[in-house]
Image 1 (cartoon, protein in one colour):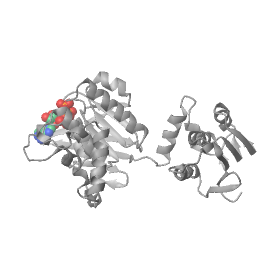
Image 2 (cartoon, rainbow, N blue to C red; image 1 turned 30 degrees about the vertical axis):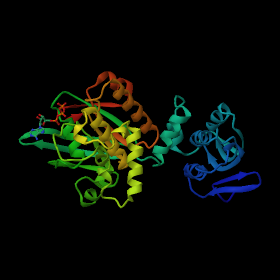
Image 3 (cartoon, rainbow, N blue to C red; image 1 turned 90 degrees about the horizontal axis):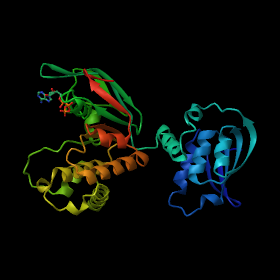
Image 4 (tube, protein in one colour; image 1 turned 120 degrees about the horizontal axis):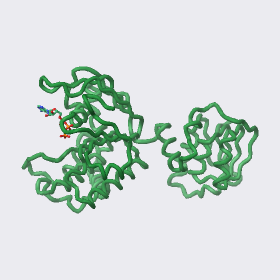
Length: 339
Ligand SMILES: Nc1ncnc2c1ncn2[C@@H]1O[C@H](COP(=O)(O)OP(=O)(O)OP(=O)(O)O)[C@@H](O)[C@H]1O
C-alpha cells in the first residue's frame, strides 16, 4: 500500500494521503467538508490504526475500513459503533502514546476534541508562564509564578480580593512589565516586537467599568480588534454580525456603546474577542454584570467554544455556583503563586 490512507467511493479513489499519525484522517475530514458525500459510501484503507484512529473514523462517520496494522484496542471502538473492519496484522498495542491517553470514560466527541487539540487543529495556542514576578509600586503581587496550558485548554483562577488575579491577566496581555520571568503565547514572547504585531491573538473580556463618553456604537466596539487587518467592509460587517449574534447582542449594534448596561457591554466585549478570532481568551469576572439568563447564555457559549474553535481560555471569577456548572479545572492564586 503506497499511501498511508486511501479512500474509495465505489471503484473510484476519492482521497489519498501520505501524512503520518492521525493527520491523514484529519485531512480526510477537511476534504469531506462542503462535499455532499455520505461517509457511509466510503471505504477507508489505513496503514496503521489504533484506538485513536478508530475514534476519529467513527466521528467522521466511516462505516467500512481495512487496516494493515491494527491495534487490538481499536476493535471495541469499531464494534460498539457498527464499523465493518478487516486487517492485515493484529497487534496488542501500536507504538503511539496517544492511544494510551484515550480513556474508556471518554465519549467519541471527547476523544475527537482531545485528538484535535493534540493535532494542533484547534484555534487555541499554548500558554507558558515561567517564574513570573510582578511588583506594583513597592508591593510584590506575583512571585515566581509558573503555569502551562496546552492548546485549547481551559482554567479558572480564583482567590481572595487583591491577590493579583487581574494583575496576572494584564501581565499576560503585555500591559504590565514583569520584574522577572517570561510568558510565551504559542511561539511568541509577550512584550517582544513580534508580540506587538500580533496582539490580537489574545482577547480580553474585562470588568466593564470604563467611564468614557467618546461617541462610538456597539458594533464599532465589537469591530475594534479588526482595525489592523486588511479586511473589506463587507467581511468586517459579516464577522461583526456573526459574533454579535453569538453573544446575543446584535439588536444593540447601532446603539451608543456608553448608553448600554454593564451586562450588555460584557456581551459586546466578548463579541469583540470573537471577531478578532483571538486564540487565547482571558475573562475577568465575566458574569459580574450579567443577570441569570445572561449567565446561562455565557455558560452555553463557553461550552460551545470549548468544543468547536477551542481557544485557550483563562477565566477569573468568584461566582462559585456558576463555576460549578462550568466545570473547568481550577487553580487558586495565593501568596503570588498558583496552587
Ligand atoms: N495601579 C495600581 N496601583 C497600585 N496598586 C495596585 C494597582 N493595581 C493593582 N494594585 C494592587 O495590586 C493588588 C492586586 O490587585 P488585582 O486587581 O490584581 O487583584 P485581584 O485578585 O484581581 O482582586 P479582586 O478579586 O478584588 O478583583 C491589590 O492589592 C491592588 O490594590
